[in-house]
Image (cartoon, rainbow over all chains, first blue to last red; front, side, top):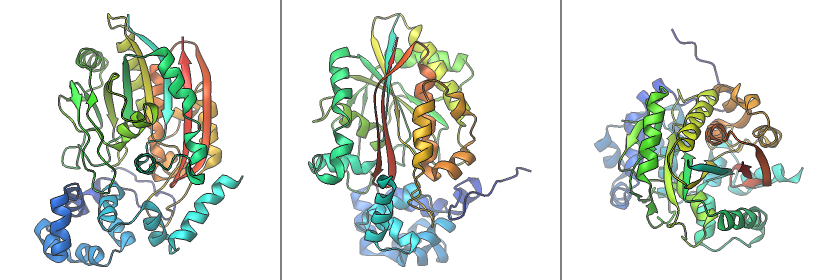
Length: 116
Length: 279
């Protein structure tokens, strides 16, 4: 039995079990590398999720742009970044969404690191 | 024998590539970051390395989770970049180097690194952003590139200690290659950052500076960490330090820091640039 150490709060460790849970979700997001896939998703979001076999919870989180839920349902940030890109969101927008801040507040917090 | 003339570390985040696409280098947000690069470019122009071995991680361009190598190396004559899904413009093809890369494969497998060998692979921003930074305007086609890819995405990942040893084996391979070519090693990515979760935006400037202080004289201070340690100390993507350690492992001569800059934040990241001479 492997003992898994818990990461710092606010971090979902993307390991084997998470990768298993999130496989279809990540596969769908990986498809967004292709412009034709991004277009197909935009035409019919739910249908596109069904095509990849996402669970209802994953589909709901995609439709609601709920990044934290997607992470907890097995999404890898590297593939979710492609989903965010499709939506026109930057990593700061995504940071804001996950931390309950506006994008500007999130950026301001990052800039503070440079002040010391 | 081939000679390793030095090592370079650089961030590889996509925002840098996008800033270059849009010509934002001299805007207030970016100026300090980009102004640190000319001394490195000057050194490269002066030293004229023939080959760059680039440690990077793929972020879901070539490799998906279906078949994701822990370590992979390219042995192709040419590498293509492609659409990664979120708007960075693909760059022109990157020149490869087949002879040394196969020699590296032989040495690595002799050394019990059972690496995945790629005769064709697309290279993503992890490799192309540093190339664009070193040779702006896509003027990198003269340099022959050997990509070395480390899994930094899905746990379990190779440890810092193992990544350092991979670099040592690669250094040994290069220095035993019968050629008079000059080789530079890139360690890309890092330093601390976290993109995911409620902890997104976490940066540890103290640790970043510690890494930059220790990597030349005392890499063992860094290889003692586990990846779980790095996630806690440097954020979920802080494990990209492994590419720096791969680079450092390949450098076994007398090392001298020629240039260094740390700038925070660039996007969500603390960006460390180091130019290390190896004699």
